[in-house]
Image (cartoon, rainbow, N blue to C red):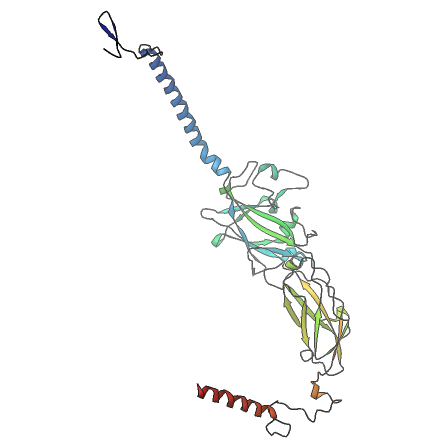
Amino acid sequence: MSGLGVEEGRIMSVCPRPSRKYEAFEPAPLAQGLQTWGRMQNGFLSLITCATLLLPAASALGQDPQQDAITRIDDVNQESQVFFNASHCNDPANTEYILTLANFDGVREAFLWVGGQQDNCQSSENRNDNIPPICAPLADSQSRVLGPNGNITELPLQELLDTGVVNCENGATTGEAYELYAFRNTAPGTTDVTGDGYGVAAFKVDVVPPLQLTITNLPEVEGSSFTLSWNSPVDDENVPQYRVYRSDTGNPEDVGDTPIATTGQGSNSITISAGSLQLEDGAATFLLVSAVDNAATNVGDGNEGPLSEPTRVIGAATFGFCDDPNVDCSGCSVSPLRRPDGQPGSGLWVVGLVFAIVLGWRLRR
């Protein structure tokens, strides 16, 4: 047979034998492997069980605190950014604020602490007897009873100052940032407090007024209106209002308590009419400008800077060309369509002619 070899009547295949040597199946190694896999499964299950038990604790440690807020200062509703300013610091014992707790269900009382921005007063190490203190309790850690809607009332600014953490002597142009901590139901003691056990209310103390404005107009202005202009202060974004005052002597101490005009953020000039000042021709007075920062909820209630140098303004009637007594305006016309004698002027004839041409062109189309 072609393609096949014959040896003693047996047919031999031309395909080579496999080189791999197979061993017989042995049950013992398989059993050992299954036993090892079982032990590994038990180990994995133990790790998963431990992780499951530890997960709530780890989650609680990383939990964000409640976002509490100071909602009123001296009966003025506060917005997102809360300031105590120079007027508050001048009478801290009588400056009261209201703290409103978020998620206050089940909260009967709170223990108040204060620290600087991101001083982490929930950590026990920051509530230790540090000198100077990082965090400190208000009123020697006395608890405060919650009122309706989660409010804690009758809190004086003086208590914040007495901690030694908050002060009214800072020189920050835009204010020094602090955080008020309210620990729920239980005094923090010497342990770390998880996020569900306290809340944080942010506030600032800003007692630094804007700088004196530099007036850029002439020191004396005459006319029926007067434009005052100034260089913007360094922190212009922190100045929401400019005020104009009047002084008949030019002395800043003689200005009234109420400004005669105001202008808003981003302005660097304002125009005042002689009529609003009741200035007759030749009469003079002085105008001064100040800047007010935004350390308040209501615009204009922040810290007011010093008054500028005075600008002397003199009332004078403003004449048109034909009102000038030195100009002969006998040929002037109040209208280009009429002559001074009331008869139609050349301008009226021109208008009539143009109208007639346009009308004729339209009719021929």
